[in-house]
Length: 359
Image 1 (tube, rainbow, N blue to C red):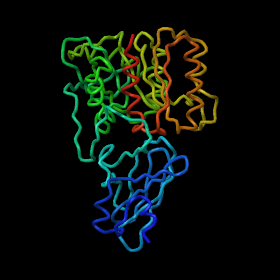
Image 2 (image 1 turned 180 degrees about the vertical axis):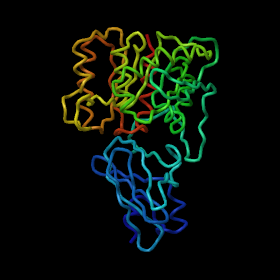
Image 3 (image 1 turned 45 degrees about the horizontal axis):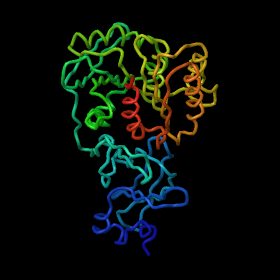
Image 4 (image 1 turned 90 degrees about the vertical axis):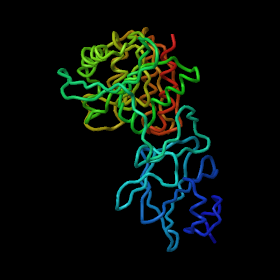
């Protein structure tokens, strides 16, 4: 008897060429209120690692074959990043065409939110990069980084999107392609995309750090202009996730002359400057919630999105969303079908930037 494989529609002898030829990534079947998903690895012993949704799972071997597997219960509406880990390293799923960089793959349950503008990218695919490359040496913040810029055809200035964690959105997830697709579909105007690289310490740079935003305002923006990048400051959207989401929203509070439009996914609003650890158990909304009782945000347009499976994040984000609207901002709130995972932030990123650019 070839259980558990037959219930997933795999009838061939596990480990045979016929068996492996029939597999094209994780196989989900309905189970209670969610899904039971079969993950398969061919070769040596391995564990299954998820970006944020689950603990690591040890795979089981089928008899003495090269087939290693795990049946994973999954809730409804879930998109996850995962990889297989062996003694030889970390690998994307060779059976799954949808990758997130060279060593991770993406799986979505059949009822997960669609991501219409994001193409399937394999682990060996090289993503197109923006043509404009600018070296930024900051005297305010210190250090140097390479900022890449994608400019639409035609004379500017254009609406501009500042993408925090820009390296991920260039090299792992094809944001430039996704935004171009949304423009072609008429869902947003042509926009300049500025990819700001990820710092070595995301918390040090992104956690309510005024020096970063002074450097962006006083150094990066003039540098972009000097290099022929015409920016419409009235239509500048800052987009960030996790600590980046916290930073983007903080900039709107403290630098309203620079940031008045924000797309924030899973902002780390639990953050407190004087906390003892990374616990979610502190005051809801962290330091940001305290600031929101004292500001007028009538000029702010902000889209919030949080993964519906981020149970510890949700209360913090819900309070910030409520207080932001009460402070006069124009607010959009949504929930994506993910946990704390960039694969789940992809669709809200494009959709919410398009919304933020509307008048």
